[in-house]
Length: 155
Image 1 (cartoon, rainbow, N blue to C red):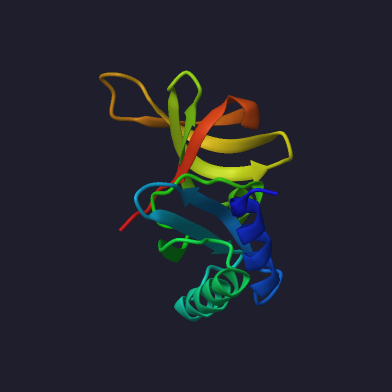
Image 2 (image 1 turned 45 degrees about the vertical axis):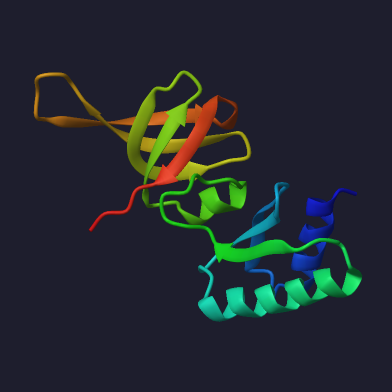
């Protein structure tokens, strides 16, 4: 198993409960190796949870001597504006406004209505050129066509 897989297993063993999950573990080589762990949760992730996991996972990586040289280590929650990575994140964001980019770079923005194993359904806001009126059109987009999906934050 590669290093990122080993670290992911360590993180999963230290998660408080089933509502938290690992989105991504990145290990980047360089002059100084960088380890980045991104967490998410069905009800969000608290700073306390991130701190606890950071300490316990960092300690275990050092204890097991998984990384021989000095390294940078960061544990964070999935940030605003970051693309959704996991099916579970899509489910968490049903009812929110998202922008879905298809593989051909076509973008659709609208409310995420439903998620299945194969596809997402959004009520896309379609605006015709030269007109102010926005039409809502239900779009079913297979995961295989999705390049990225980002939750839109409105203030």
